Image 1 (cartoon, rainbow, N blue to C red):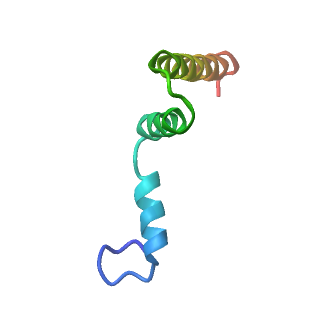
Image 2 (image 1 turned 30 degrees about the horizontal axis):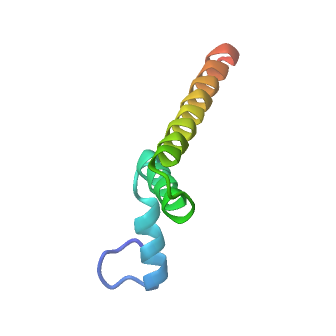
Length: 73
């Protein structure tokens, strides 16, 4: 299914693979933009969403690596 030509996959499978082939941060920011576009009309509230969501992600990343280092795996 991985061939770029003569592949047996459907167009939906190709679209899904292209969506998930992006890096994590690009997916995260795209998701936040979609939420902000759909639900937030105020630019200040939109900025606050981005700040808090990215701060939470950074905290989670730090906690995960700290735990790995502490437990050595």
